[in-house]
Picture 1 (cartoon, rainbow, N blue to C red):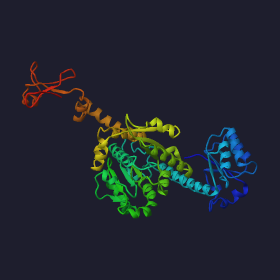
Picture 2: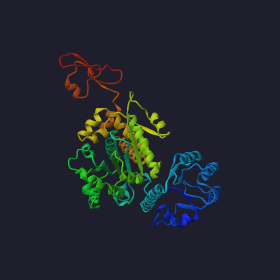
Picture 3: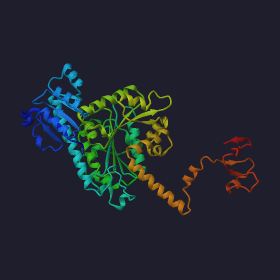
Picture 4: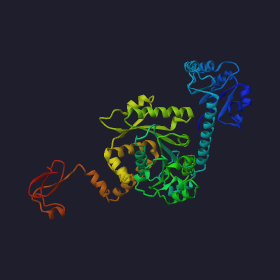
Amino acid sequence: MSGTVALCADEMTLRTPQSLGLDDVALEGIGWLETFTSGSELRSAMTAGQDFEEVWIVSSQDVPGVNLVAALRRDGFTGPVMMVTSDLGGSCRSRAASAGVTEVEDPEGFTRRFAVELRRRARMDEAADAFSKGPGASLSGNPRKEGRTVASAEPARERKGSGLLMTVASGSGGVGKSAVAACLAAQMAQHGARVLLLDCDLQFGMLPRAFGQEAPLTFEEMLPGTAKLDKLAKRTKAGEVALVGAPAWLERSESLAGSVPDLASAATAQFDIVIADLGADWSDMHAALLEMASCTLFLMDQRSGSIRACQHALELCQRLGIAAGTFSFALNHCSKTASFIPADVSCALGGVSVQELSDGGPEVDELSSLGAVKELAASTNPFARSIEKLAATLFPAWVEASEADAGMKDGFATFWGFGRSRRGRRRNRRDEPFVIRSGMPHSEAANGGSEPGEPGLTRGHRTEQRASGRHGREVRA
């Protein structure tokens, strides 16, 4: 859970929070909030070793707000500081920035920020409470623990609050969010997760097409109640992807948007991983989903406008008070001739870690448009392999558990002398090509080779790769 927030305001303001727009709010009953009436009292608490995540300064009985901020910075406080004032002019902002103020808000903005923080803390408390009642699964959302699968404990859908909600967002359209979300969902299913993919681009979402679904479930069908969500969860097995598509009627998207966060929250109790692909046009739905998400992937491409739009989106998240600790960043369409590399984007965003997604070429769009995103996720396409690395970063416990299970199966087969699968044998012998020498009858090749000293089927790195063509012409393999 997040740390404590210090609120400094005079006695009259604390007795009447309605003056700040906080109707029906009892400040003394909020566990994560500690109030102070003077700057000296707040500084004394910090000197005594009390740690605060943030400091909100509305007013003080002994020192102006800007001077209090400067004193806190001199005392060594490095966390965010928000100052509330009715004067939002350039002079006030300049003095606040010089003193070390992180954010300046008017009373109305403070009211919105307080409401957002209340909702965020309430969701975190609910998640912690649900997790404490579970069967002991790890915080990463991985149902495997100490080598045991879900089946050895209880079904995943019966473990309330065990799922993870991931959102895929961007500041602009056309960066490849849908391809990333679809490929990531397919790969996590390959790792044994029960995945629900939500197409939250409610106006122009095309995710069902990537999975070849002509008549998918839509938000119009799912939102009236939870009955269909329960049925969808029950028929989705481990290693499968369930999908909820955008509304069939575009004009209904606005009326349905407010209920999407509730559906996503309910789905985390039914599925292992819930991935929400957000549209480019930001709304209240975006803010609500980002607040409750376990992780958020901000995606950019090689356009400078895409990077700038991501900066704008991050600034909005900061103003809304959305915690940035769950944010991850990725740069799409990377190649040797690309305009930007992850290091460039990292510098533009203030030093954050940015993951590289390789350019997969036209094959990505072709397979997605043909409904073959599962084949794309399992292929050797550079984009798919980049998503595989991204999955290991976002869901390390799931990937490690899946690889451990695969390793146990390979070890069991090898121990008992069965060797590896045919696919594994082909993979390991890829660098040892078959060589067919001219003059060898097809029947000999089918029988596995010829006697020593005769031309025939051999294997090895140093053997010349030659074959006889249809008309006796020598053909290099």
